Image 1 (cartoon, rainbow, N blue to C red):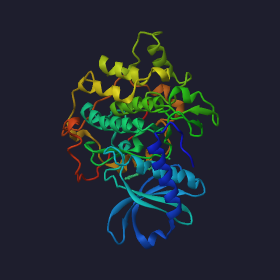
Image 2 (image 1 turned 120 degrees about the vertical axis):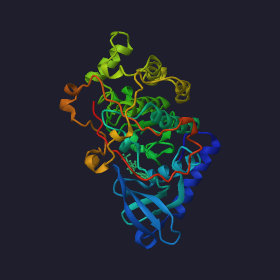
Image 3 (image 1 turned 45 degrees about the vertical axis):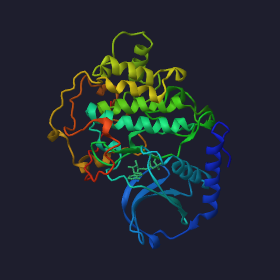
Image 4 (image 1 turned 120 degrees about the horizontal axis):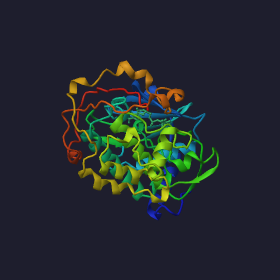
Length: 376
Ligand SMILES: Nc1ncnc2c1ncn2[C@@H]1O[C@H](COP(=O)(O)OP(=O)(O)OP(=O)(O)O)[C@@H](O)[C@H]1O
């Protein structure tokens, strides 16, 4: 199990040591003897996450179960150890020193995010207010900068992997380091294409190799920002055959002077920021920390925000439409016919400034989620 020399020697040693130690000390246990399972928190491609209470300590925690049938022990150890290595960052999910196996699963324990994930609170086709978006995305930027400074690339930035502790996003944490790899290494492309996938990866055929670069996260961060502020994906896939992407491409390459309709709600400052994050050429994309400069600027042309009462808060209404992978709400056939010129704007009225995110770490917010369907 060796890490690339690109990772600093100290960090490499820590990660290798952690993996070896975990592999040696990992016990086989019966979950029901030690934990009371309260409910399922979420499902992913390779397993599920449950809310559990440790029977003797009484601690509430999120247990991530990875199916042995589809997850190699090496991958499990890598995800667990990278998560632990990063978890001292306040914007990254904290970890318990707990990893074990059952007959069917590899399991590790992490801090429980009481309000779920970001996907559930983005109102579909509306988006979050500029204030809430800034407060949230600021913390995501700091988490990614922390990762990138340690020569790691997350590779799976999307709202489902941003865990929230209150619906106003005063406290959020980045999670799911299952795809995280060291910058500069070569990986085989195995995952499918989702709206957050950078164009250079969309063009890479499955199972062929590609270089793991920070610019992959920067692109996904730009798409995430668009989704948060509009409640829509900018495109289904960053490929020429996708008309929304093609329109964006023509505009960015100065072949068309018309701003595509879904980008018209943004100010020139915000558009400048987007063109740096979503630069078609990966080498021209900015570093994550470069977006911090734009936080003092206004991002939305029309900042008028209707009252809180308009927000749908009954997660049951839309709970069934949350995608497991990621797909567009209307299905790919009618994407192009569903183009909206303008979207109504909703926001939370009680948001404080994003600058005070770090102060508010003790939120006991009640879980009220607004499940959404993001579609173009
Ligand atoms: N610590 C946590 N607290 C609360 N909810 C969580 C926690 N961890 C995960 N979840 C929920 O479970 C979902 C799936 O978790 P996670 O992304 O870690 O699984 P995954 O198998 O890696 O998913 P994917 O295949 O999409 O990458 C999350 O989107 C979130 O809704």
